[in-house]
Length: 194
Image (cartoon, rainbow, N blue to C red):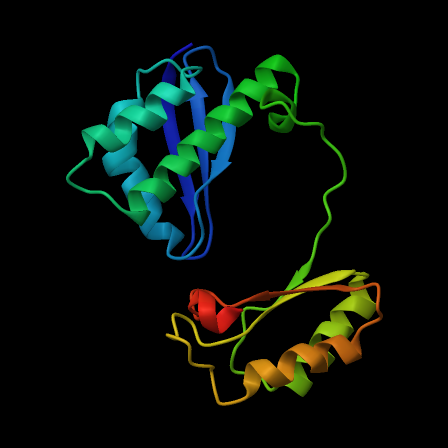
């Protein structure tokens, strides 16, 4: 089964990849977000040339060979683009075998616990707690992830004291059964995080 076509459907924020084979079978994947429209161009320029005409079921080979062929262009965009092909080919294989990708790689499918998330750092702890509590009440989330620190902040907070205030403020707003996760997004050194 040979890869006949690779299509992307992208906006700045999301890009889906459709792979079709010479037998008319297809699989869908997704590249990583953040400038997904740029990653779609990388799919066509730096991934598709090596994938078109290749064995659609030899996923490991493609994921290994493409970075070698594009060794002068390492980095995030290439890896994100390969991820779109990789996930589309796993979807194709799952469809062919009548199994979920989870089963194909040895797992057991089941419910997935979802959490509400915040990508905001420019919000006061009180307003963030109120916003997350509203999501809890409206959608029934029983877990939340929110931002602490300053992105790539080198041990600095978004503003002094924000992290120390937001964690207990959000905790007080939620029932004890609600799990809280924090995302410092490369802000803290291990010593500061501890």
